[in-house]
Length: 571
Image 1 (tube, helix red, strand yellow):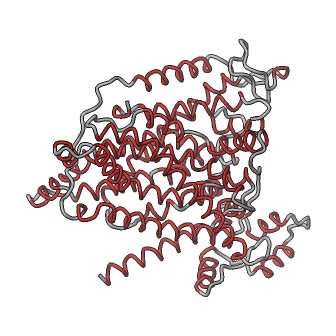
Image 2 (tube, helix red, strand yellow):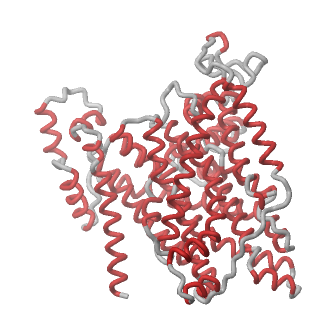
Image 3 (spheres, rainbow, N blue to C red):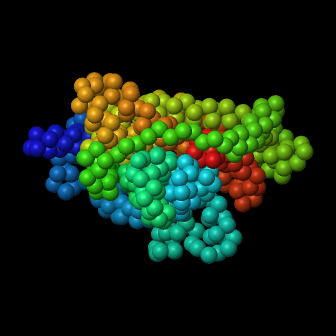
């Protein structure tokens, strides 16, 4: 027991130290003198001559290398001192800790809203499964897929334009009271509800095939009782994802916080990373990673408490359910619509400009309208799909392979690298990657790849822990089956299908991640028709010319519907 505790403590300390060192190396990764970065961030007009740079180093006691700087910062943290900002000269704690409180409030409320909405979308599937109909999705699953594909920053701008400005019901920005919480929470919680709804639908479908459900139905247990137990069983699988969502939202909400001018930790980390204000970034990211470890362990504990003795007593008998019999009409119809629009766009020139047609409304000449430069939106939509959809599919496939490997080969009873890396904001990862390789679509893809596998790994780990508690797994191990045989013949057939369906839902999520990086100037270039870049360039025209935003946003939503409807049990 003592050895295990020491190993876990060493792992936590190593994760925190490694994260701090990675962030601390940001100026050196970019190949620029930290003193010069501080001068630029302070907007000092004085020339960056050697004497001025030496004065800045002496004033801030800038380290000579990242290792020395990180060790010094870690030593101060042990005494309760988070350091001093290189840019503002104020204590880091005065900036980071209040921002953390704001972000915890926003992210916690958004996670709660997401769970409630996802639960409501899953109720019809629970009732159908309780009646013995092997369906885990229905309309709720398709709606969940569409919600999961909503671009958060577009939804945020839409809420500001309609609810705050148009209707005057809520404040447009700031964080001074409960009214300021509503719109940011909706912008973050609605797309998250779509992801959770799809996970719950898959969990319900899997639980409906367990033997206890048939036994209860045969014994005449009421439908409502079976549905409630199925819901509890499904929630046990999704709880780790909900808790990961809380931490992921803390760091990934930088764009939403920027739209609503919310002084949260994501915005603080992003601004500090862009200024290369290392002490602030180190404090913000290490706090996020520490929360990731804490919440990851909490997810495992909640999973155990919800399942009780069944997790240790061979209480599960999961089965491979047959595919649904009805054709996937929704997926086919939506796919046809999307393919027709893409092909029509590919036949047009995305670079041709007509100044007289700037922001032109949809017409026979421009079926989807024209963008602010007079370029045909349909043409850019079609050519952008090759990048957005193609790259998203590749990234989701890579995430699936890595997630399954980590989830199946790792320890199912403890938090691991996934819980650490989940807390790293994709935006901050993108900045670090861009510092090494320079901004661009390839750098954005690499940044997304580094974090896209994490939810899949946690999902696979949770399912694998349940499968290992099943009778057939215990019997196989007792019979002398080797590790790889058990993995290939017993774990992968049970864990693989729901994680594959999860990966399908993550296809539009990967597109959204690329879109967010492009929105911040870390992804595709200005002339690229990639949907994320198109949204970044046109979101400001949402109220004046909504059609310029509608095409790429609708493409992402349709992609989400296809991903949700591709599961035969969602029909």
